[in-house]
Image 1 (cartoon, rainbow, N blue to C red):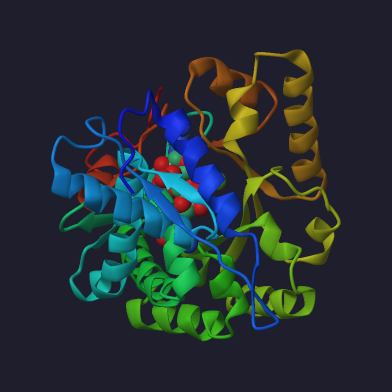
Image 2: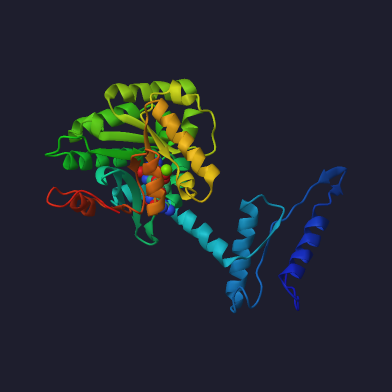
Length: 348
Ligand code: C2E
Ligand code: MG
Ligand code: MG
C-alpha cells in the first residue's frame, strides 16, 4: 500500500492498526469461520531511504521482523534495529566456523593480592576476532553459542588453551599461579565436563591446582543432583571452583555449604557502590564476613578506583581484579607482565 502525504510515522502506524483490526474480524464462508491476520512492515520516504527500491526492501525487512516477533502486528522500519538483527544472524551463521578458522582468542586479566599488589593469577576472557564484524566481546556471542550448543566445543577449546597458558606461567615458580576459566551452565549440565577437564590437564601437563573453574550462582540452583555430582568429581580431580558474580539475583545462600566451592567472586555491582553509601559498604563487609566464616577465598571484581581498593583492603578482602590493576590483555602481554625479569607487583 502506498500512503501519500502522511504527516508522520505515528499517523501511518494508526492506519496500520486500523487495517489489522479490520482484517482480524473473522470471515464466515460456507458456514465456517475463517480467521485472517497480517504482518505489516512500514518504511517512510525519505527518512528510511531516498531510493524507491530500497524503501520497498526496508518495508519488507520490517515485515519479516513483524512476522518473527509474533505476527499479527505492524513494525516500523528501524535502521539500527535491523543492523542488530542482521549482525546477530551473521554471528549465528559464522559461529560454527570460528573455531576451525582459529578466530577465538583468550585474553587474560590479572588477579592481584593486596598488599603488596602481587599478580597471583589470571582470569581467561574469551574474545572473537570476527572476519567481518571485527573484535567481539562475549556479551555479543556467548548467549548465541549457548543456545546452539556450540558453547561445548568453544568451552573445550577455552579450557585446553587456558591449561597451556597455566603450564607456561607456572614454570620456575613455587607458589601456584592460578588461571581461572568461565564455564557456562550448559557445560556443567552436559555430562562430559569432567572428562574434558581431566583430558586437558593430562595433555597439557597442567596441575589441577593451577586451574579454577568459574560458574554462576544460577547453576547451583538448577538440577541439584547432577550439578553436585559434577562439581564433586571436579573437586576430586583437584581443580578449584569459584562462584562468579556472587550476590546478584539469587539469595539461596544454603548452596554455599552444600557445594564444594573454594572461591567467591564479589560482583562488580557491589564494588562500584563502595564508599558511595554507608549501607552498601556495610553489605560488602557482611559478604566479606560470610567468605571468612566459611573459609572461602573472596575475589572482588571490577575494582576501578584507588578508593574502592582501599576500602576492600581495610576490610581484609585481599584478592582483587579490575581495570585499576590491569585490563584483560593478550597472552603475550600477560607473559610480559608477570615475567620474572620484571617487577611482578602491580602497585596501582
Ligand atoms: P565475568 O566472568 O564476570 O568477567 C568479568 C567481566 O568484567 C569481563 O568482561 C571483564 O573484562 C570485565 N571487567 C574486568 N574488570 C573490570 C573493571 O574494572 N570495570 C569494568 N567495567 N569491567 C571490568 P568480558 O570479558 O566482556 O566478559 C563478560 C562475561 O562473559 C564474563 O563475565 C563471563 O561471564 C563471560 N565469559 C567470558 N569468557 C568466557 C568463556 O570463555 N566462556 C564462557 N562460558 N563465558 C565467558
Ligand atoms: Mg568470570
Ligand atoms: Mg563476574
